[in-house]
Amino acid sequence: MSTSTPSGMLTLHIGHEEVVLRRRYEIASILNDILIAVWFIVGSVMFFSDDWATMGTWCFLIGSIELLIRPVIRLFRHLHIQRVRSSSDSANGQVSDAAQDY
Image 1 (cartoon, rainbow, N blue to C red):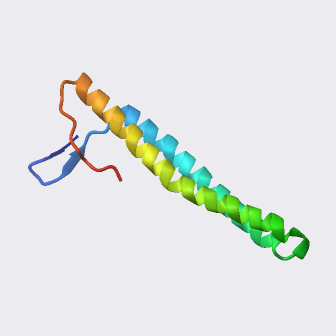
Image 2 (tube, rainbow, N blue to C red; image 1 turned 180 degrees about the horizontal axis):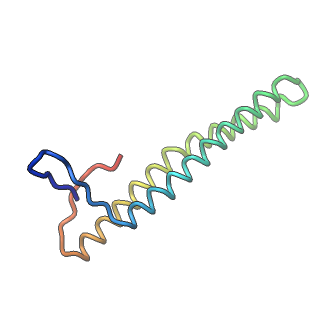
Image 3 (tube, one colour; image 1 turned 30 degrees about the horizontal axis):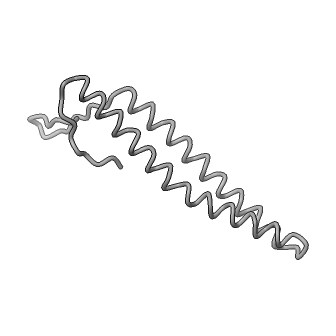
């Protein structure tokens, strides 16, 4: 996946599919973060009125569930990219390395 050049520079070789996957998961993560903010802002505004406090609590609960979705998106991205890497490596006759994907 990566090689070192004599000048000490690191060259990364990332396939087109991996870049596309990273972008898609990044968009999903950004949209999830926006939804988290919306739920908590709406819930906070609802707490200004006693009549809306129960609905505000539900908004906080939904926002908290969205917070749980954040690492799930990252996990799915990691697993999906590893699957693409291993399938492209096996198609090229290479052994997949165990590089971490951050």
